Each structure stands twice: as C-alpha cells, then as structure tokens.
Length: 295
Image 1 (cartoon, rainbow, N blue to C red):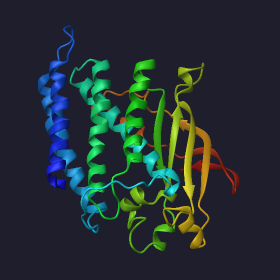
Image 2 (spheres, helix red, strand yellow; image 1 turned 45 degrees about the horizontal axis):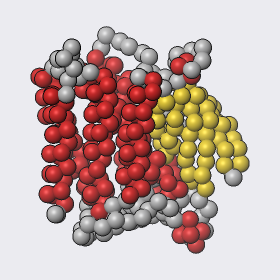
Image 3 (cartoon, rainbow, N blue to C red; image 1 turned 120 degrees about the vertical axis):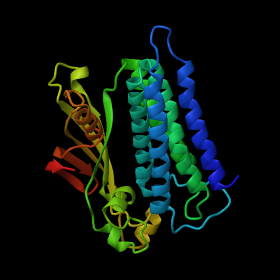
Image 4 (cartoon, rainbow, N blue to C red; image 1 turned 90 degrees about the horizontal axis):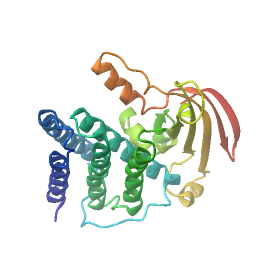
C-alpha cells in the first residue's frame, strides 16, 4: 500500500471512530448531531491541511522508500519521544473537549478522545516509514499511546486533569550549525526540530491535592542541550557534549479562568498547553542554576 492510500485509510478510520460516538450515547443524554457533524467536517479539513503542511515542512526533501521501521530510541536524548507523549495527550484532551461541546457524555468523550488522539498521530509514523531519512518508530508509537493513556488515566482516576503536560521553547544557535536543516530553518521549523530549545513540563495542580491557591502550580521540566547530531557518539566525534537538564519551578494554571467569551475561553485552553516564563531551578551535570524567567 503506498503512502497516499495508507493516509486515506487512516483518515477514514478516524472518521469512523467519531461517527461511532453517535451510536454510543447514554439514554439520558442526547448527542447534538449538528455540532458533532460540524466538529467532524471542520476537524477533518484542518487535519488534512495540517498533514499537508507537515509533509512539506518535514518530508519535502526526503526521498521515498518502501515502508520500513527504524529504531531511533537512542536519539536526541529522547526529546522527540517526550514530544510525541505531549502531542498524544493534547490531541486526546482537545478531541474530548469538542466532543463534550457536542453533548457527548464526558466518560465517552474522554475514551473516544483518547482513541482518536492516538489515531491522529498515526499518519506521522506512516510518513516516517515511507521516508528514506527516517523510518517508522515503535518508540514514537509507544509515546503517542502513553500520552493518550495519560489523559484517559487521569479521567478515570480523578474525572479531571490534574497533571498538565506543557511545552516551552527558546531559540538557540544550534540550527546554524546544521546547514542541511536538520534543526530547522526559521522560527516555525526550529520550534519543531531544534530539540535544544525545547523544554517539556508536567504542571501539577497543587490545589487538587492540598489547600493551595488555584492559580499556583508546581512545574517539573525536562530538556537536553548541546545536541547538534542525533546520537551521543556523533556529537562527541564533532566536539559536542550532549547532556540532559531537569527543572523544578512554578507555573500558572489558566484552566480555572472562565469568561463569558467563548473565543477567549478557547484561547486560554490553548495557552494552558504552554509553560509561561516563571522562576525555576535547573539541574544537570553541568551545574545547578536559578532563573527568574525560565522558558
């Protein structure tokens, strides 16, 4: 099966999974079919456009090959795997949110949102599998599934999200050292490809466990630096010393802010996926530091 046919098959599978919700409703709660159809049509259009854009940004210069797997679990200090976890979680969360807006019962919305969140990311692995520069990664698939499961698990355990995966980014000088564009060219590409500038966080809702201000969260972060090449041996050979870095600091929880504006509420929902600059301690074998505005 070629790439185009495979992508179409996955898209159809996602649409079928959403349509099944129409027949999986509680007798006490009727799904708003008009809203759900709007979600399916709008989501499918945006999803297709996103895949086309990603294909142009990431795979445009890569030759095609017969589908194959590639073990990349030892690359980039696993920053890419954390990114897949983050994406799996938030695709699941966002899908559940729009399903609940369509009056789908929360427990069903969370379940189908998690399934759909995983399926949405599946075509990326398929594109990798057909790319001569990559190959499909079992590690990526596992990270996608873990992110979706992390969302669903909190829903089952607490009926809410208390541990929020978040992302932050700052520009570095590393992309200029790879003229082949491996670490991105320009800000959009660098945000996706330059793992040196990325930090992933788990923002903990302290008020859900202790008596604490609702807006104040504890943030635990992970990043890695001095990575010009994917593997440690390559970096060492080129004179770079790749290392991991860990963070602990404060964060702001925007999920409790509710306004009368649906647009503003949506903006706050999206903004809460990002770790805002705030005081934090960092720890690595290079030393420990305190930063007042850690990105």
